[in-house]
Length: 342
Length: 247
Image 1 (cartoon, rainbow over the protein chains, first blue to last red):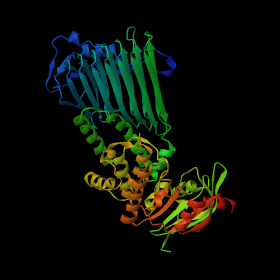
Image 2 (cartoon, helix red, strand yellow):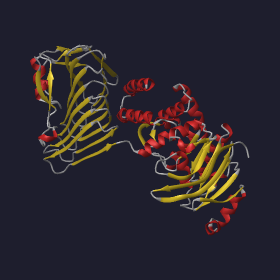
Image 3 (tube, chains in turn blue, purple):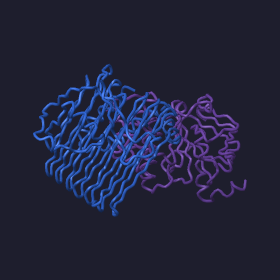
Image 4 (tube, one colour):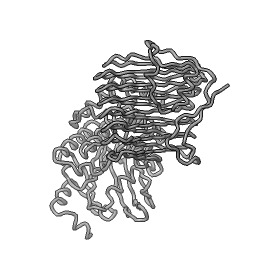
């Protein structure tokens, strides 16, 4: 029997009629643990109790299914590539740690065959010690039969930073959670997200930047394109907790609406119990500007192709912020391959 | 005159119910360079945008043929594929689209599909003419470009796409002397490499210094009010447009 759990809940909730307060997902009664090269179970799971964007009910589900955290050692200065090609109902909790002053680059590439029908859960937990940098890139491009929960939690110490770049294409339903615990002074969390959703695909996001320490900074930038009955919900919360004086958080979203059949919901939220902070949000949501299309068509590109190019540009706006050259090249190769297929 | 490629007859165009072009005539032959001059509001840019097919510009009467075919019946992308090009006065910014991807897609649309290697090699050669760093190819199209960088990028597209007729709409406006010289070198390279025709819409004449000009048309109040050879440029430089406004 399937389990129904609540994920991606908004704190605090808004009007029920908007249907964005939370999302309910049905998960298989049991899932098997995924395999990751070089991963070893963590010695003390309690040390990896880090809050995530999807929330506690997902954590409970994983625990009930015996899915414990495993640690993957990422060598500083090198790119650690983890490929997840899903073939069955699977769940993983991957833990990464950057020691003081280290720079760690991680790339997670998620795929599945078009014919595979399955549910997958990938939870990623990150600890960034003082003065460290974690650059995490996720390419999420499964086949249409995969329903995926991709959930992230971070704990960021003094002057440390976690830079996340995520690309979402494919998959029928993707639920994405992210929560950064900015517990260190002068810590930084950045999210660059690019998505293309089409043909009824759904993307449900809940991203939370929790500012706990003075002068902590956060940025969430989302760019994407929606067409053909696709659905997207983006919840972006910047939470300034008392004591985080001098903190600065910003969130921006740019969504290209390519036809009238799509559903696009955006919930920017700034919570504040500290006075001396700066928080901002902005959104640009709409159809492509006719001037832009005219310019592209004046070069011989037909309207349909111009829209495809703009759609892909939504991804590239995020990709261009990948800090590690090897990770950038990896992702650009995937985008260029798709370009050749068009 | 060499073989005629563009013929504009009694063209009337309105924008938001205001008539801008009021019976404009123009003929351009293969390989010729024509210059359109005129005061602000004369309808010079309206002509360029109408020829390229911008939807806000409504043709109320008149005829335009390009290589004998009815240009006004074609969509903008079809006009480009027939060999028409316009260098924009204010090119739009297209976030997320790399310059290299845009030009490569454009060349492909015009029937010149290139491998990435060949494309980069060809682009680097043309960028040398324009004194541009090849690193620009990886930048987002026109995003954060200065006025001069945008104009150079337009001319780079001209050199890569090799159209049969290029309309340059105020390509020299807002540029310093050095930038005008570089852009002018690019246009000259187009004349030499492609031998295509040019319709240069301009207020000033600095861009013309290095170019062979076949004919100059003065446009005022939506019509061509005077025509002549290159000497007409010097005459306008000396006396301005006043006498044509009174005509």
